[in-house]
Image (cartoon, rainbow, N blue to C red):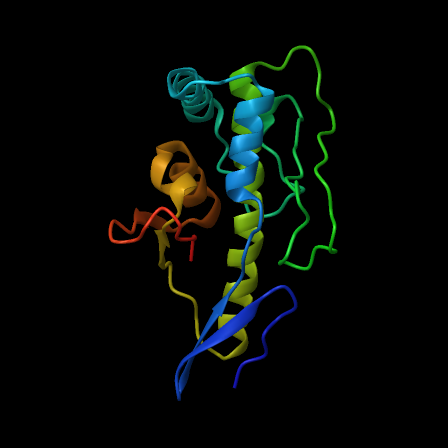
Length: 185
């Protein structure tokens, strides 16, 4: 028996086994929105900005932990709450909206893109924390584990996968067999 925490749901995969999961609604939308708002119309300009964000993250990363209230000091205190179309999981009220506090002129395109990516990771970190709490409630001691990434955003961004690995303290691998319509599980 397992008590599924608010914000998660489960699938029965076998008579004796269930899969406890969480979901995010806006991870791909946040990246598309940032690309549009930051005026990165081509893949080349987006990739160049991602490269600068990767360098910034590698230089200033403090391995952020799960939680939207924990931001990296490398981003001048800017945190983005990434709810563009409302959230459907992790205990956030329905209809929640995007919020960008502490945005200043000193921010760069790469800085803003990096913060957008971190916002996705913080939300995934909340889901991972809830799943681990559900596992612990059964008496199962969570192992370090492996996250299998699928979905276009995680498949295309080594930076995002590294942020997820840092946030979760888990190895992240790409599911090469999944389609780009998959989701992170």
